[in-house]
Image 1 (cartoon, rainbow, N blue to C red):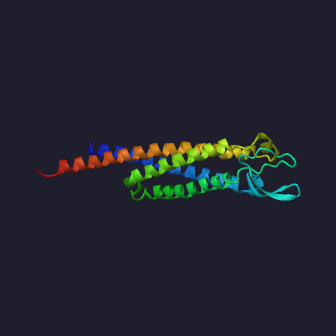
Image 2 (image 1 turned 180 degrees about the vertical axis):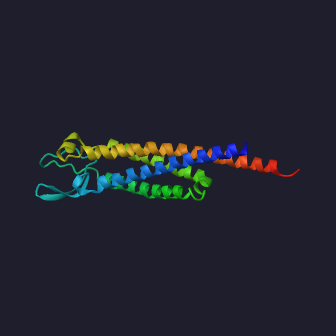
Image 3 (image 1 turned 120 degrees about the horizontal axis):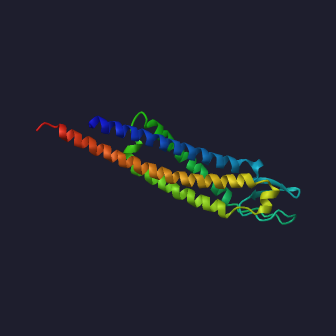
Length: 199
């Protein structure tokens, strides 16, 4: 019976470990992709030297509404740095979480502190929800999207932001389940050791 329980917990822990590592890696990849899309000037999502009317303008596509001659809307200059910060912070933390999860295949560490991991995942759940709402609500006008060929980049950033929000929710669930099985394993080991003690 003890061997059966041990095998069950080991298998479950390995599956949950794989799920968590995969989720953190995908969130990291998507976050870096967003930084790449908005950071590349040629994409014109955020171009501090956009050629316009024989001059250069500091342009952010978010909330930009017009590209007519003499009516250039330069967009919301707070949103572009916000999106970069949103993704960069997420990248750093999820790289750390991914690294700790990989190290756990040799030495159990992160599972012992699953409440802290859960709170961090919960934080990024809200972090990406707010970020996804911001980039969706401040989408540039169809005129700006068309004239600067921004559609695929703006939609890409929106899509990846909503994906990260969903993946952070799944990471919360996976962490709670990991914690639950960790507690069960600890309780089972405690009961087994008590039964083996001499009377």
